[in-house]
Image 1 (cartoon, rainbow, N blue to C red):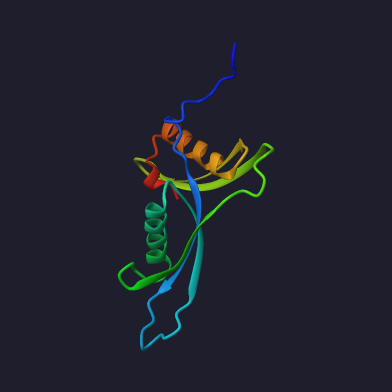
Image 2: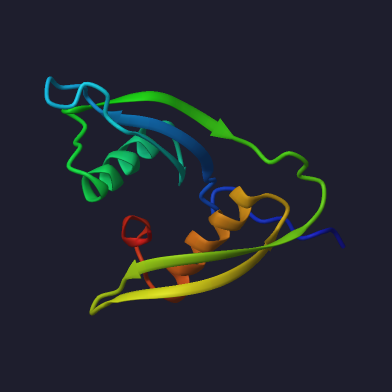
Length: 132
């Protein structure tokens, strides 16, 4: 027959973003430390939101008292061959928090992360916002 093609609406297409930001300069700290994170999200708005979520946990910097210096989308150099990607993740189930290591086989890292989110939703009933 034909090759199997997955319905594109079934897979959440994740993108990889590099976000650079810091706490806003204050008289007490005129040159705050700059942080750079690589995050996976569906769009830039969600990526910025995740950045500030982790900044609140790392150091007491909130969106209202901070500034973004750069938001860039990262792409794979050569998505022409299939590779194995290993992903360490932490997610919250109904009862507890679990650490997990999973491997996925895909052409791009974005595809592997998309597979991870769909598998976690299907097998473990984990919501995307509980996966870190």
